[in-house]
Image (cartoon, rainbow, N blue to C red; front, side, top):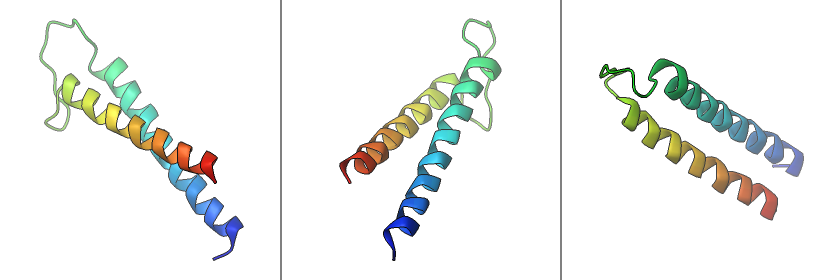
Amino acid sequence: MRKTTLNLYVDLVVFAVFLLLAASGLLIRYVLPPGSGLFRTLWGMDRHDWGQLHLWIAVTLLLMLAEVVRR
């Protein structure tokens, strides 16, 4: 596989992970706001579960970006 093709695939995956991170952040901020007095869930996950998912997506993105920079 050529290096440019590999870079394209890596960039697309990094972009997809970034979109997941942004979407989960917006979801936490606007759909499941803190202090609403209601216990809301979305797809069976509450605000804290979405926060954990958001954290691990961010860790994944950072590791992928570190690998891209290392190349």
